Every structure is written in C-alpha cells, then in structure tokens.
Image 1: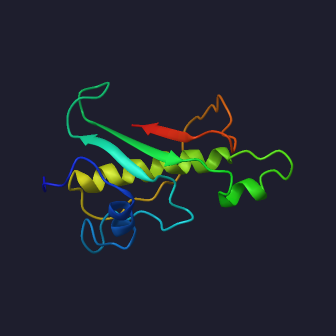
Image 2 (image 1 turned 30 degrees about the vertical axis):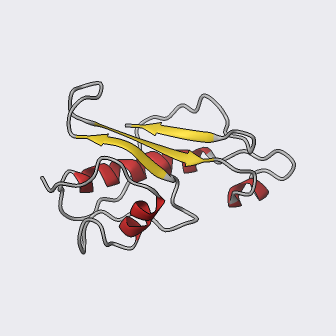
Image 3 (image 1 turned 180 degrees about the horizontal axis):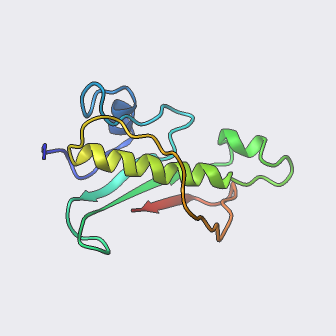
Length: 129
C-alpha cells in the first residue's frame, strides 16, 4: 500500500477531485458543489468495528449551501441522497487510499433508513465508515 497521510484538508480533497492524488484512472472525488465533505480527520487501514480500518470525514453545514434554497423552499433540509453520496464518496476515497486500482461507481444500496434531518443551523455533519 502506498504511504498517504492519515488526514486530508479541503485542498487535499480538491487534489483528489482533480485526479492528482491517486494517479490517473484511479479514485477521484467529485468537484464542488457535489463534494460532500470538507476534510478527512482520520483514515486508517486497521481499527474500526471489524478491525479492517476506518475513515472519518466532516462536512461543514452553512445556511448558504446550494441545496437549501431548493430543498425545500421555506423548509430547508439537506437531501438525504446527498448524505448517502457523501458516504459513497468517502468509501471510494478509502479504496484509493488503500491502493486499489481503477474507479468504482456506486450502483445502488440494499437498504437505507434516514433517522434525522440536516438543517441549515446544524454546524457539521460527520461521516464514519
């Protein structure tokens, strides 16, 4: 496995979006505004619930995020599918960080249950995989 940092700031994530982090044809994050994280605070090949590693990322929530104006006018809520996409983005980043070659694309998910809403007054969303 290549040696990469265990934390990434916004510029590191943007480098991944430009295809500069893991090499041509490998894991690449989407560019803003579809990038659903601002930093990765910890990534490891060991630990986690099953001892196979973990990754933690944060997404700063501000009232001026693009989706709050249209989902829903007068009752702004982050679309649940964007939160799910953030988890998929983080999973793809994790695979690239671990040295997997090529690109993966999320084709579906077996079952999802959303248990809360992300509103504009929330300060941060934390993803853990």
